[in-house]
Amino acid sequence: MNVAAIDWTSVEAGLDATGFASLGVLIEADARAGLIGAYGESDLYRSHVHMARHGFGRGEYKYFRYPLPGPIAALREALYPACADIANRWAERMRTEMRYPPDHAEFIATCHAAGQTRPTPLMLSYKSGDYNCLHQDLYGGIVFPLQVVILLSEADDFDGGEFVMTEQRPRMQSRPHVVPLRAGEAVVFAVNERPVKGARGEYRVKMRHGVSTLTRGARFATGIIFHEAT
Ligand SMILES: O=C(O)CCC(=O)C(=O)O
Ligand SMILES: [Fe+2]
Image (cartoon, rainbow, N blue to C red):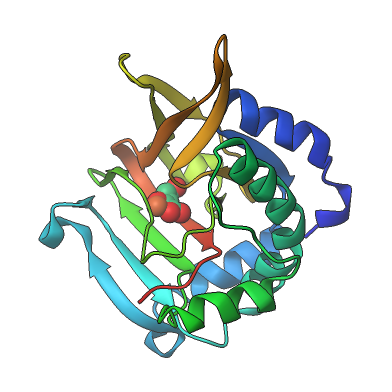
């Protein structure tokens, strides 16, 4: 984890330009292997979702229960403050009333007061033929506008399985993005809407994310979502 090395000015510029930005490699090989190795330990998770059963795609994911694994808990807390600054600037530009407190514990208290009490960080597991349909991770009325995904598998472990985003612009066709990810690399991206500066002021685009079909091997990723679920 090297959160101190992140250049948040360029991260914000990337988020403003495309709705996503790399944070560099934040989970080293040992910790990646640890998280993948613990995927089968059911005590660590509060729920297990088979995507095909819900029409979400193919493959599976599991939501962690508290206490979160060390590296996930540490990153969630350490990444939050800079993300909250960006989130507050976005809220101003989009003229929404929500403002985000400077530390994550305080934001969690806001979620709890609204009845969102369950943890949302998750592990995702894909095998050849699996994919994740375009979606948004919204779990209640309280939404933190940025989230983070980290690839845990090595580049050689799989083919296909690219992280993709779409940007739905008002009265225009949707724009696709393929987001490159190295092993351990984290990408911060827009959960839902983000502001874009147009010729006549700010407008909003709606973002969705997903994963293209794996054509070989196995792919694990972890997602760090800052709001809690109902
Ligand atoms: O497997 C992936 O890269 C996508 C993960 C995802 O949907 C998420 O982190 O919310
Ligand atoms: Fe997601």
